[in-house]
Image 1 (cartoon, rainbow, N blue to C red):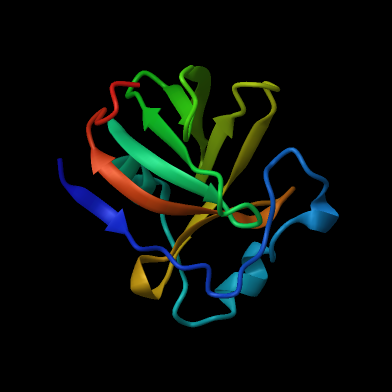
Image 2 (spheres, helix red, strand yellow):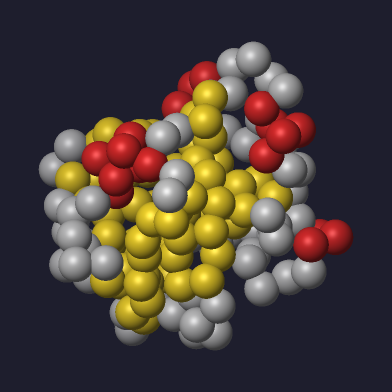
Length: 146
C-alpha cells in the first residue's frame, strides 16, 4: 500500500457536506484560484490519481467525518463512512474537464474541479457547494476491499 496524497490542510477553506444549500458552502473555485499556490488539476491528472484507487474525503465543515471511496475503472464508486459497516454504491465520471460523482444516498450528481496546493492540499470545488471537500489521503488499489 502506497500513500500518494496525505496530510491535507484546509488553508482557511470552510464548507459543508454536499446536501446543504450553497450559502453554507466553502469558497468558490475562482476565489481559491486567486492564490497563486493553488493549481487546477486536469481531468487526465484526476483520472490517473483516482482510477482503481481508494480516496479518503473529509467535508471541511465536519472534520469528524471521513469517507473512503474506491473509484472502480468501470465508473462505479463504492463509499463507506468511518465507523460504518455498509458500503454505498454510486457512479463517477468525467464531463469534459469536470469530475462528476453521484451521491449514493440521494442519487444527486455533483460535478466540479480538483485544486491542488502546497502541503498536499487537494480540494474538490463544485458550482453548488464551492470548495467544500478535502482529499486527505489516497491509497493505490482497493485497500479497504470496498
